[in-house]
Image (cartoon, rainbow, N blue to C red; front, side, top):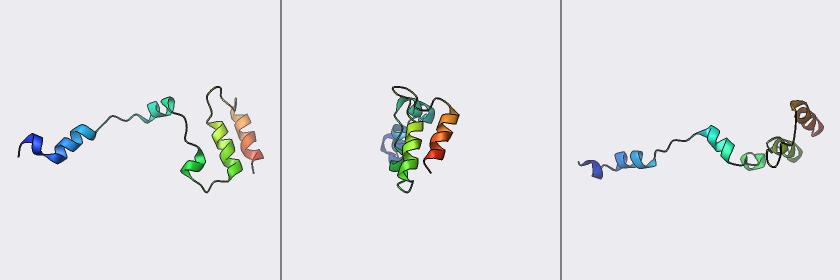
Length: 74
C-alpha cells in the first residue's frame, strides 16, 4: 500500500494540530457557565460569569470582592 493510499496515516497527518489551552484562554472570550451546565442557579452563574470578565476591565478587582459576590448570591 502506498503512503498516499493509507487513509489512517493521511488522517493523522492532516488532522493533528497543536492545541494550546492556555493560548485559547488568552485569545477567546469565556463561555457563559450556563452554556456548559444548565443546572447552575442563575444568580450563581451571573457571579461566575462576572468573575471571568476581563474586557474592557476586570469586574472583581480582588478575590475578596469575588468571594463577597459569591456569598451574596446564595
